[in-house]
Amino acid sequence: MAAFMEVLDTSIANVALPYMVVDDNSQQSWRKRLVDRHLNVTPVIDRCYFHSIYFREPGGVLFELATDPPGFAIDEPMEKLGEALKLPSWLEPSRKRIEQVLPPIQLHKPIKEA
Image (cartoon, rainbow, N blue to C red; front, top):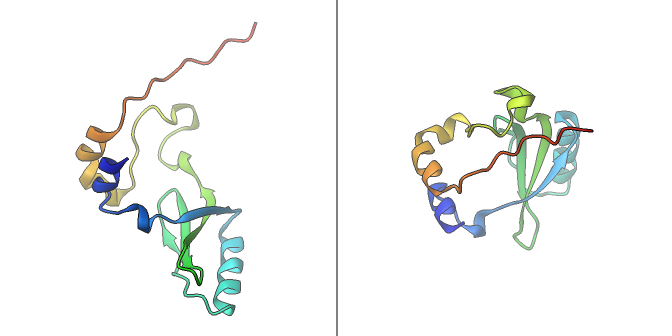
C-alpha cells in the first residue's frame, strides 16, 4: 500500500472518505446544502469514471461525494471489465510505476450453469 501511495504522491492523511451519490443532480443538491452550511466545498472534479466534490467537516475529516455515472464501462465493454488496467489520462504518465507495484490479478472463468 505504501508503494502505491508513493506512486500517487499522496499520503493516508489526504485520503477522503468516499460516498456515492446517484447522479450529477443529486451531487449538486448535496453541494448546495453543504455550501449553505458554510462548508468549503470544491467545484465538481471530473475523475473520468465519476464526478467528485470534496469537503472537510469541522474536525478536519475529508469527505468525497462521487457520482455513480458515467461508470467504469466508458472505455471498455462490460464483458471486458477488469481484463486490462485502465487509467485516467492524468495517471497515464505513471502507468509503468503503477504496474510495477500492483499485485498480479488472476481472472477466473465464469462457472457454467448445469
